Image (cartoon, rainbow, N blue to C red; front, side, top):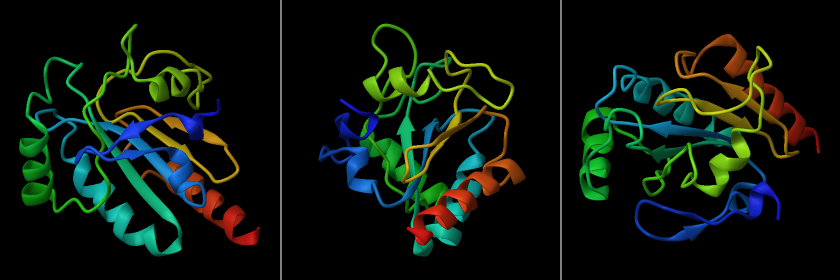
Length: 165
């Protein structure tokens, strides 16, 4: 089974897989409402607006694994994201990203090395993985802003490659 076949659940309870986004460049990011990095939602939403017409989407995965910084129910998370940051990108059900009970998607993603060659556990909320239609995955640590040049380059590269196909 490939990474695109792993079952996911939207925040509204609908089953999906990354195969549903196979023709898009996807940014998978674990999100939290009560984190010092929470303002990254604003830049994630801006990326969604800037690139969705070209075949890009952010997928937000709420996670309460880091100091309980996403304690809310699905309804509270949806309300917070909508009213505070105007989030329009898809949100998934709350997941664990590390450890024995990590979601299978994150069990695979944590095998990917970041820019310094380090794989392993997700360090904190807002760790980002850019997955291109050809299956390439780029990993960016939490403090890397969503609009950082290296992330934009990964998105643009994936979009250029997918539009050339």
